[in-house]
Length: 233
Image (tube, rainbow, N blue to C red; front, side):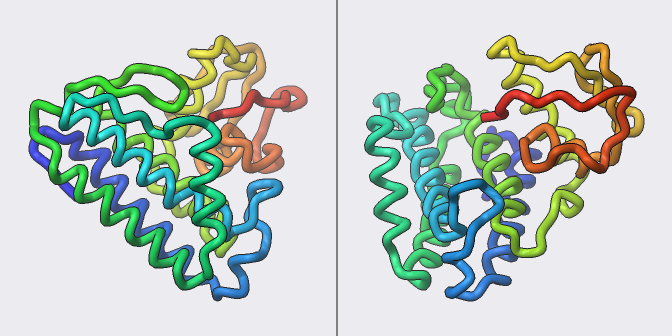
């Protein structure tokens, strides 16, 4: 999962994240895939369908960067939903194969990208033009967080500290782009995020769970009531 000119650190995080997600999936029986995930309204089966289609959508962006031919992540919101629906209709064994196959396709697209193409700009699903070097990070955050969402005994405490800090960075960047940064300042050891009035501190896994909307912050310490946070993605 490496390529000349690629963002090597993020690619390493991504490779580890794919293995982490595969470990979480491997802990689940086929029957357990129909149970709810930690995402409200999403079964594990449908979440995995989303994970597979996300990989293929990122292949589209790398194809765009490589060829110069505009190839959006999804042809439309309807096409995105239809792709998830199609994968969600697969039998458990077929879905497992599809998840693995999508990772293989994405890795092949990374390996095929020439060094100079990593600087080529592509458009995210949110409409931002970004260099192709951001594509591996877009996948990295998916696999590390959704491994937790599978509710297979994998928690944020298993996310490496550098990846966890990068995820919190990502959340604050997203909030800042939408002018929705909450009035808080977060402290994790010697790391700080935000400049707000409410001081909140805790261990990185607890902070990460809170800012990504995966917890209500019960494990955090604050000098006032915790606010409702904006959505991340």
